Picture 1 (cartoon, helix red, strand yellow):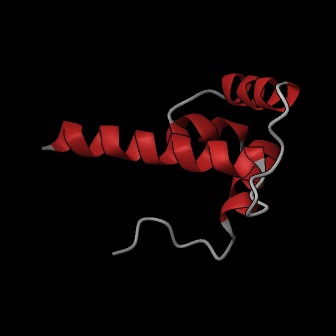
Picture 2 (cartoon, one colour; picture 1 turned 90 degrees about the vertical axis):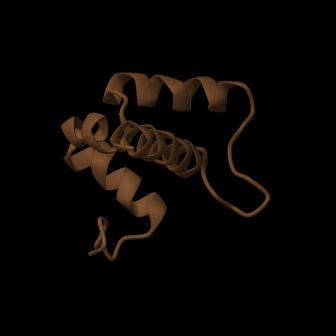
Length: 78
C-alpha cells in the first residue's frame, strides 16, 4: 500500500504543506515549519535558487528532509 497517494508533484506537495498545513511539516519531514523556512532563506541568501534541472530550493530541501526522515524512521523500525 503506497504511503503517499497525492497527485501533487514534489514542489506542489511541499508548498501545500508550507501554506495550508504547516503543522504537517513536522510530521512529514521531521522538522518544524520555522526551521524549514529558515533553512530555505539561508540557502537562498547564499545564492542557491534552482538546480540546473529547474528544481526549486524549497523542493530540494523538502526531498532531502523527507528522505532523511524516512530513512531515520525505517532504521528505527528494524
